[in-house]
Every structure is written in C-alpha cells, then in structure tokens.
Image 1 (cartoon, rainbow, N blue to C red):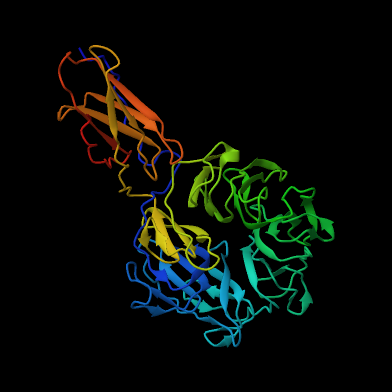
Image 2: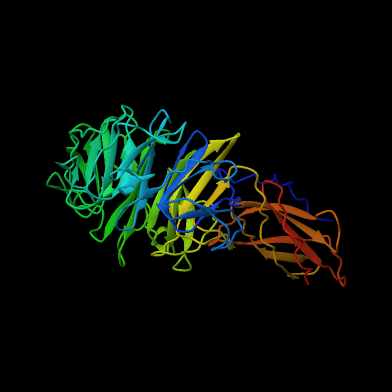
Length: 491
C-alpha cells in the first residue's frame, strides 16, 4: 500500500511578508531617465531627464505625448493624470532630481536643475498644488545649483540637499531649508561635499542626511549623519570608517512602525559598501548591515518589508548567492537582512547604466502599488522604459516547470526527485506528484526556494509492483493557485 502521507497545507498567496506580486502592470513609459518618484492622493509623480511619455507596449520612437522632465500618473491605471508642467533651463540640460509631498498631501515640492517652469522663472525648487496642478504663488526660493534631495517636516519646513552652495544668497553648503513661504531657515549642517538624500525623523526633531561628505559642521562623519532639525548641528556622527571612504549614501527612508531608518549605499571598487543599513530611530545605532555588492539607489518600506532598487550581483558575504548576473529589485524584512522570495527584474538600461533609481508606494482603489523609475528599458524581459509598477493583487505568474527524475533504491520502491521550482513572488510552493497519467496526485508536499537556493525534493512511492513500469509527472502551485504545466513524464 501507499505509505500514508499527511496532507500538505496550501502555500499562502504571496509568501509572507512580501506585499507585492512580481507581475509588472501596463504603465506609461518615458523616453529618458526617471530620477525621482512621489505619491499624493492616488497620483504618482515622476521627475527626471526626459521629453515625452508613451503607452506601455509602444516602442522607443513611437507615438508619444510631450512631457518635459515631469509627469503625473494615475497610480491604479498607469495612465497620465494631467499636470502638464515643463521644467526647463535657458542653457544646459534641465532635470528634475527630487520630489517630496507635504504631510497633508496638498503640496508637491519639485527640485532639480532648472530655471523655469512653464516658462516662468524658478531656481531649483518649486511648490505645486496637488489638487489643481498649479504652481503655488509666493514660493520662490533660489538655489544656486542642483537640488537632489527633499523632505518636508510636520511643521511645513522644506529640507533640501544637493550641489548648491547658497540658498536665497545665504551660504548653505550642500544642505539647507526653507519655510513654506520660501524663506531660508537657520538649518545649516555645513557639509563639505554634496548631499544626495535626507529624511526628517517622524518626531520632527532630527534630520538624517546622506551623501558624499566627510565632515558636517567641521566634525568627521562620512556619508551619513544625524542633525538637529532647527540648527542643523551634528547630533550623531558616524566617523572611523562606519561608511567606507569609497562609498556614498544614495537614499534614506524612515519607518515608524518598525522604529527604524534605512540607508542605501553605493561604493567604488571591492570591499566598499553597496548594500543596505538598518538603523534605530531610538539612539540612531545600527540594527543590521547588508554587505551585498551592487550599488543600491533607492529604498521604500511597506508593511515591514524593505524594497530596494539596486544592481546587486554578489551576496556571498551574507551567506547568499555568489557573484553572478545582476538583480535589480529585491526585498528584505526590516528585522532581518536575508533576501525574501520577491524578484521581478529590470535590465541595466541607458545612462550609467544601473537600472532602477527611484521607488514609491501608492494606494488607490483598494490596492497598493509599488512604482519603480530609473534607466531600465526592460521589465521581466519585456520592453518597458523608465517606469513600471507592481500591485498587491492579483498574483498571476506561475512557478517554473519542475523536472522529475526517478530511481529504484530497492525492490518495491520508486524514488521521485525534483529540483524546487522558482516563483518570482512566492518562495513557498505546493508540489503534486502524479503517477501513470492519473488525475489524482499520489503525493502532495510544500517546499521553499529562492533563485539562489533551490533544494532537491523527493518522494518515495512504495505502492508499486516489481517488474512494472511507472512514470511520474509533477506540478508546482503558488499560494494564489497559479500552477505550472505538468513536468514531462519520467522516466
């Protein structure tokens, strides 16, 4: 008789805690690089270096609509949402590099390298009414060079980082802040090299800054620092090679639910820092450090998962995969740097090229959406330039096809073996083994796998007779019910 086998519970849809499928959705594209994304009221804003947008599936050079370095999209459909603002310069190449939304979602701040919006003078930073998509009158600060980072405090103060040396004519080296009316505040970290990212802590008392710098206010703190929200004085530095001198910090995000903040590293050469840092909001100490190689450009936390845009290619120092082809989108738990079973992918694309450069999360029509912007020109192997998005539901991608092999270790037994299948958003899969073309499985089990860890699974069939020939086929099913085709008969 067949050895009794306990029924295996089905795998849950989207293996916990992953919150997005790996199935990319139809989304308008740009004809250049998207450097920044932000969300307000179900609308996603994209800023970058581009001149037009076009529908999903339209090849480069196909029918498009003008959009000069800025565009807005319906988060749920991926289609344009109006807001025809053009960011230009009278000389040089204009670009939008930073976007941030006020806590009440009424104002979008746009920063970059431009001196006009729809033909009206503007120097590096403007405010846009999200309800009307019109520029807010009276807000006209003057930044002397590119604004690369923005965040807005609960009290409305707008913090900025970038390449500038002054704001409204007052010296502000690489970091500065303005009031909602555009006046310069006293916040002055006085860094010695450009700022690339910043984030106000949830309590509004501190501003976390990241970039290329080696000193803040004359004190040693390379690439990352904690400053007071009022004066910009250094309140927690990170000297002594906490971040290697060959690395910079490209993004910082905070998450009140986990009590943490997270930083993205980009290094040069071996033994630098390309991974992610998890830090405590209480005390600003380190929680964990991911030492994978392949620079990280952007981060977002959603429901206790840290999503990252990078070109990671070597996680051997983390007990993960060895040096191999680049992966561009990954997920980790906020409490554990181990990679989760979520792996949609882009290519490197144009520009440097490094693939994705910006992330944001939007909610609309009862679903959550993760938007991705960057330099890429394909998503999951399909042509798609600079923008894509993933939703919390539905999950439509099936696992890869299992491949079975059989052996006869002893009389009256057949051992069926197969390599775990791969599913891009489910690590826990359900396998069903069928014998001799039967419609009812003779064995059901579950198994976990990641793209770099696909263990062998086995089933020993003892309900067999000597001298008879048996064939076996296997299917793999994810938690949403997506099922692979039957494997070829074996033997």
